[in-house]
Length: 278
Ligand SMILES: [Zn+2]
Image (cartoon, rainbow, N blue to C red; front, side, top):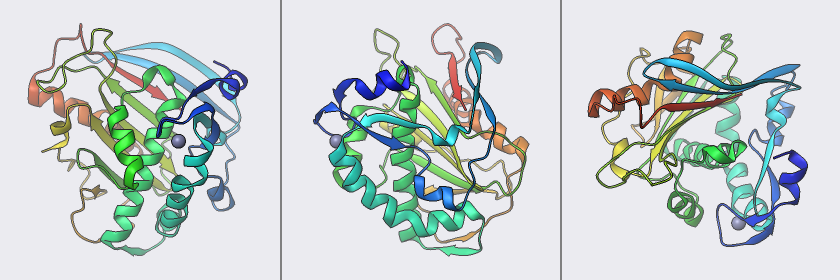
């Protein structure tokens, strides 16, 4: 669907029952352009299927311009200018320090705000690929109720410093069978990871329709570069040691590898991982 068609479409807001023409929500907030230049001349938009570590490129397209100008039309005017705008403003100060790599003590209150901001952005950003929506509508509606991070999510943050990893947004989806969330007949994805890079701040999030899947996921392969923002684990001194480009890439698929190790989801017929990336 073209951007123009998206704008005209009548649909329901992803966060509330409002129906109509949706407003544009920017995944990378407009206010950050003053501090982080959006100057990438071209980018590759790709979708990749990974079946038992065999990568198959489904689609790859070079586009002009910086992908961080992109927005999605899936949010109503009321949500956009109401609680979402309020959350942007509330999280701005700690988020900006993280995006610029500035030394700062992040209190638990600030971590919670940034985790809420990341949740909102991850929920919005997956609509860059409307066929790849893996977050449950129950999660979105629960989040919109109080704009706080959800108990069944995990959110981490790292400082990418000036590493040369070129990712902006990587959305990984799978359709996995869990006792409390069986695979739907149409095979729609029910489990997701998202990597979102804002300036020097690297965010990674995990959620599943099966609420218990986030329990016990420990991401500790980065020698302290990756900090768990949510659920909180005490105050954080920012920036942590810089995440290098290899770690940044590895982390995009690390959670799914952990799930495979834990549950033996190794039958490639049913749950190939799909990666959608900018
Ligand atoms: Zn709404």
